[in-house]
Image (tube, rainbow, N blue to C red; front, side, top):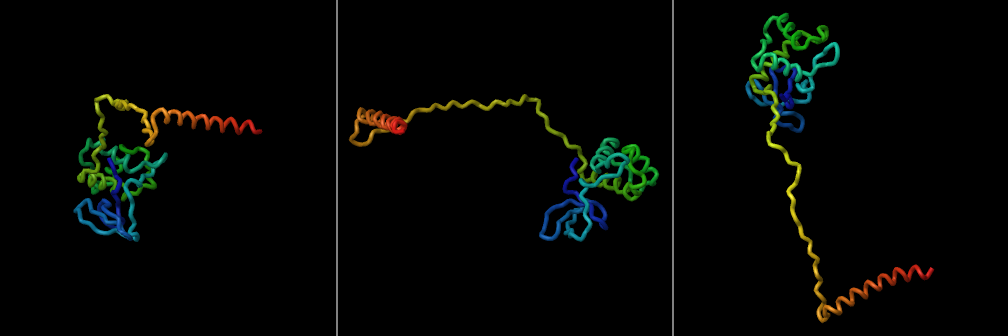
Length: 186
């Protein structure tokens, strides 16, 4: 399940998907009615992937809680956010038994269930399935045989093959003579 690109805007009902980014705003699409509009920097925007719920131990991410509800409901619709608050709290205790009852407000609990049902309807809560192949994966690369052939230099015009060989050996002798000659002078 991926919550990337899904945001909540304070003062607007529902959730929104980020479609594009403008110079001074973000273009969002409502998950409820698919209408698009700009959201500006003055709007209070919260990314769902960054939201977490207070617990007595460590904060639990919203994604973890939604996945737990999805698993408990077996992929079906959850409780309505309009249900009795005590019912919603009892259900949340079953999913997240150590949530901080003093710092998690009733409106937060209602939002969790409202967002769960909305994300389920839009298909954003489908669990991610990694594709695993039954075929063995070979790490070997195909072998390619490359034959290196020595390129023979064609003798210059007017030079025979014997003269070219003697010129090569003479230049090799000069190089060794220069190397040995420089060390003798000292």
